[in-house]
Image (cartoon, rainbow, N blue to C red; front, top):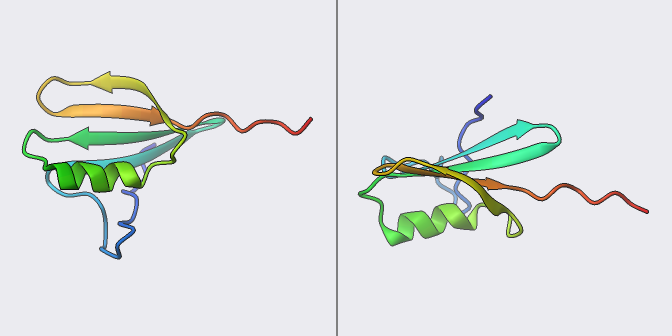
Length: 81
């Protein structure tokens, strides 16, 4: 299930551009964030997209060769002991 793009933290309507798209996929208990990057993306667009991801998310998968999709996975919540 693909959810709409994550809102732009600067106040735009959405972070998705023609060059960079961010999606969030929840498949409990895992939460993934897909970052699709077009070859025409700028460093500024890519940096802004990465800034919306959780800081402890890690690269879980990657797809593509020209248009690339990186899948970042949030670490699982730690259970209280």
